[in-house]
Image (cartoon, rainbow, N blue to C red; front, side):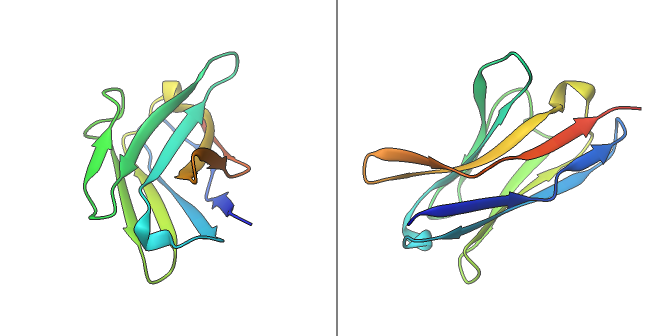
Length: 115
């Protein structure tokens, strides 16, 4: 019954900003680290970053300094704030949690960075 639903994707110009949201249900959200991944056409699904139970964040080098992950445990939500977007950031973005030894994924939300 674990469910993750991403939203907030869209078309944005280079240098612009976008905030993605992930609504989680079916598990004790506050007890789990959450992650964001992305997958560009023809490429592997890569880790964007993660946020721990305590709120500590880690990021891939490609997004460090531009992206920020946050969580709101009262709303079972995790967010990905994306600033200074580049065309290379174009991808489907996925929310992820590892629960009981397996990974769960949302349906993904498309982010397109283009002029």
